[in-house]
Image (cartoon, rainbow, N blue to C red; front, side, top):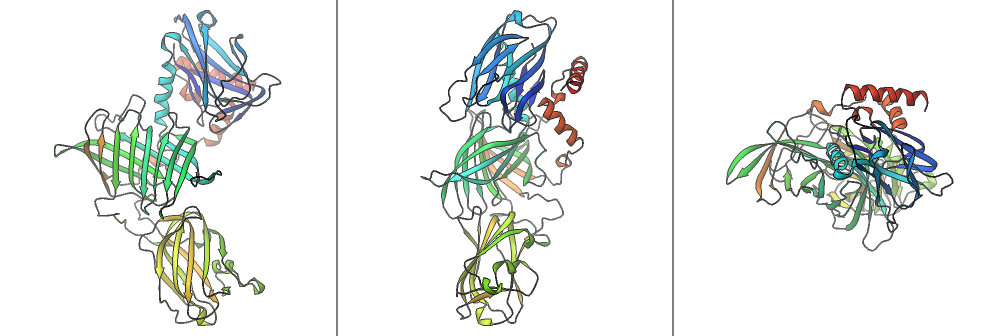
Length: 538
């Protein structure tokens, strides 16, 4: 009996030997939500010559919501079956039902999961599998092997201070870790566990750190973060998206390395490492992980060029237009001399009735400011800033100084002066903290601009030059591990937009990819026929 599964924890759903239709059903990122009277139907096949004495149906739901009816070929396997309690945490719960062999038909079969009419609440369906009783893990193994191929993973995140009760939204976390052995292009861990970390830790170029433990199905994680200025927060995430490489990596800081392993001082080729980790903050410099097979690895990026090896700097690009909000500690709004004037090209200005002031800028997206410019106002040179700090922040609460100046002086009115940031790092918020001016009890500026350094012509993604580290296989001894950057851009990171609109419509109808269900020409013909019937009678 071919493995039968429908995994709704990803979009599109993963299907094997099954065609899926649904009614009164909402498609959520991690499940299908069935309203009262809603159902999901799995149309699957049992081979003509197969004899199955007994089978099992496993239904995975989230939380303890509405009851469910389960029918196979019109026969009830369960009616108004209550979901096992989960303590109110919304964790996946699995119900296993026995199926007498005589209920399975040679050829087409129809399994139906229902939320009964009049039921209160939603039935949040995450996965369904059908297996012979003597090999109950068959579908799970097949599903895990296919899921492992979706190794580009994105999470929505939340953070909170220790002891606090309220979680706050954090930046998206995106990662992809995959090692391809040098023999025949085989992925390490081809048992279906490849590219599936159990633990992951990293350190940013600004000194920030994070460590997380991931659920077995990658539906979420729990961990902690330390900001660049030393503040510690709790850190958790919920799966937002999983894609097969290279989808989802365009424009992301993807690194590709040709690697070697060192044994007793001798180095030998060990394949290719693809590494992507983007937490919305500074570029990553160190990454450590343990996969579900027990292999541990740790690498430090940029080691070949010395500490935090610098990439070539391209042309500067002005990103001031991406500032979506500016707030000042004080402004003279009676005559319109407000902080918003700092973002315009006019000769207007901002004025604060204080010898010190703070200006907070929020960007549309995080950026590594390499250069900033200040323009003096139209009059009163004694109001010009003299001493200040430029600070960056990921969350608007914890700040890191990226540049500081003392004793500065503008020689004339409407003069623009440019200042370089020694070690640019990506931040969503920037603060200009003016600590003193030229002697007045008021402070003013005409304009503030932010610029970033474009990447060299090799491509848009930031790539480290080299890495050094180690790997330890389960039960083995650690070995040296080093890599050399593979030049880009790479052809396998191009977009795949052809047929996207049609694909979206198909997913809404079938909640899955038809191509994944076919195992040969006969299967393909049968499924195309069923698809035509569903399209004709939705």
